[in-house]
Length: 321
Image 1 (spheres, rainbow, N blue to C red):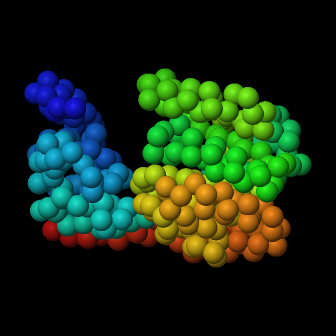
Image 2 (image 1 turned 90 degrees about the horizontal axis):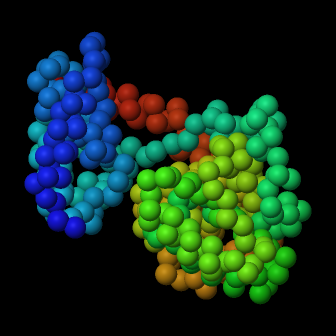
């Protein structure tokens, strides 16, 4: 839709008010995504000795021009800008850029070994509390109910795979924010498409421990995105030694090595995705081998210690002025 004067005024007033936050004594301040970039001019005026870093998590390669021009008009005070992939910085000029891949926290409730959980977290990690049968093959996708995550394509690929593995089940796990009407609409469409299938389970707003258990308990995790930023859910699954069938978009190919720790398929090719699911469900040794390799790749590239080192490098450069 059109970027109206009213929308511009609202953005300015909110970001300027937020820039009044008490931030004394910091060497660097990181502003995340376009929502906060408008704070930069006021912060630079209030704290001229503080380095300002913009961390843009989204893909700007297909951004709507008026919106991109409006947001990037606030870049002048920014010392460095961080992007997930080099191509995501398309259209951003006049600022030094860095590429930093996201990472997962192995000590977080979502990623730590289930044996280390206790209390409510341990209860949430009990697969017996969920509607699927943990003793049968399980395919899972953990993502928002969003058209770009292609949940209907996931259902279609799963159903094709059940022609060869009829005992397989599917669970789609996602959040359902109150302020996401599009997500609710996508959920309703998936619900309608699967209402007569007792082996497809839609689970919403699970605690992190529950997601942890499902990513470990699944035989295959899907990330059938049509478009993607990075998809840390891929690294979450690989860390738990679960092979991933993903698509060749965004940051997924950085995490999934095709034929090594999972499969990368064309996002429009449902048949190939179904074949990949079938191949993994039919080969226990392959799943174990892919799972072991997946954990090693995440250990080497996508854990928080590496992320911290990358950020320290950016901060070091940003404060050299």
